[in-house]
Image (tube, rainbow, N blue to C red):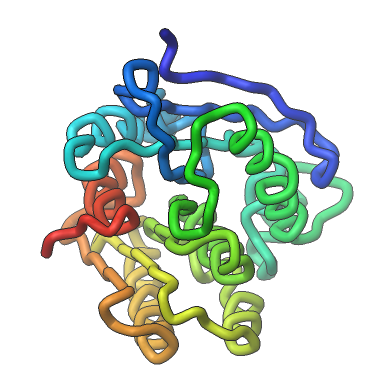
Length: 264
């Protein structure tokens, strides 16, 4: 039986088609178990290589390797939109992001993070819970992404703590959303069992590496005041770049963390 199921879904919230990839645990067709669900952004790069880095996240391989510890997990990848990725993954857009979007000749430029979240929570999650054997409660529902996908994981995860219990933010591009993100983080209440994995490489993106690294430290210093330290996992990856190659190497740590099996 096919373990990677591809669905094309029309989103009423975003008013565009979204391709979804459901990656099933290796024993899904042999057992009758229900499984936690991890929703991930940039779903097209989870198994297949990215055209930009020539690497994938290798999520199925890693999930299979850790299966005895995690007892299996369903991973739902949502493909990013070629033109609207930054808008979908943002609750705020800085001037440089707006300039970049203007070069794509997008007519209506605005943050679509809330619409994307509505698609994920009100349209996609009910479909996944109906069609697959899931553990649908918040303690078994997670979210993760990289770069702008890390930004939206932080925003949507903390906005909808009644839906998600753990998020993973790999190499977040904080600088794009910084003002809007922290304005939001200042206003919310925090569920004390909410868990956050966040990481950064030391060589993320050439001259921008220092900016990425400093913003990561700023976020950690901020969030450690909001949540118990035991619910936070910060990873600094020496020499790692802004690419699927290094996110794949760190993915196992997050997978064990979000399924509460992380061993330091």
